[in-house]
Image (cartoon, rainbow, N blue to C red):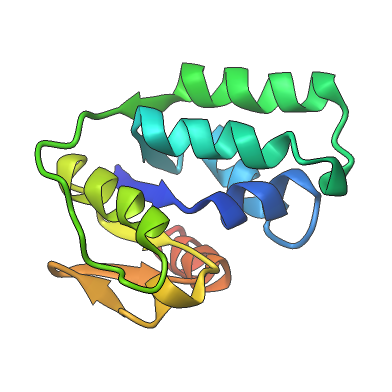
Length: 137
């Protein structure tokens, strides 16, 4: 099964019910494994709780509980300092390396501009959904 790191913007977009809600549905269908670290989950939680998204507490709790239940937690063995313009994005690279993932899925320009990191492709949510579709046909 493919292993992926989901950037926070992918989780938020999915939670808000846009086209990327399919990412959550495919995750729920066990088409891939999500790899996280405690730093990644902390950022998910912090962003999900931002008032501008207007998510109900029960929705936030359900998402976080799902992440805790159905993600694989890894502990980064190295501290990566690579993205100078937004060092907070380095946590996703650390998770990807520690979790030996197949993809980093992101909507973040800093990550997408890299195209890949240590041979791990960095793709958009749409590209990931297209890839899942193509491999399941």
